[in-house]
Length: 215
Image 1 (tube, rainbow, N blue to C red):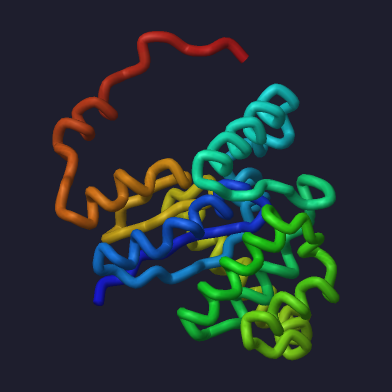
Image 2: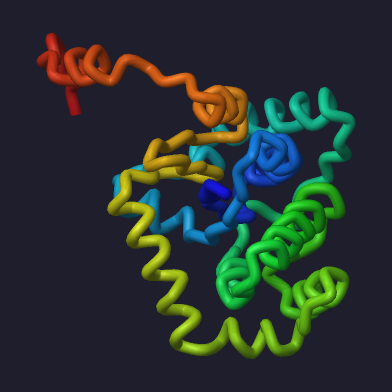
């Protein structure tokens, strides 16, 4: 069965919303592979800042998230503070080699963060979440502290950046990038065989700028 890579960092509330669509994606005939990456490193690599770092965007982002959650019958609570440090979650996730177990863990983290308001940077919280997923929480906490796991996360993030990713959640299917929880319908159309006119896209991208924004 074909696979699709779901790049995530729990710091994004849109990651939470996107996890609710995993059954739809897999029903289209592809396996989802969860890939933890560090969003902050992506921002740094591209010279960007996150929405939460821009006051006008921060409020609008969470208004939007609350509207989308309400439309889906989801209970938005949000973490005790935001932004928060996601490294423990990401390192624990990358230490889980089994595809289905990693999905289960990622979904549980999303719910704990955004529906239950838990602090997922807290090792005690993460130990309990892992146990609820039938995983060895203590072993995962220990693994998250190992240099090879830290390096695995760094390498995965660097590979994602090199592939052109700049945000989360992102999905890559057959080499094509889909960014954001609101792109899942487009992703499903692509899985079903729909393709844009690549020649026309490249023609447009080759056109020169007619104006430059002043610094």
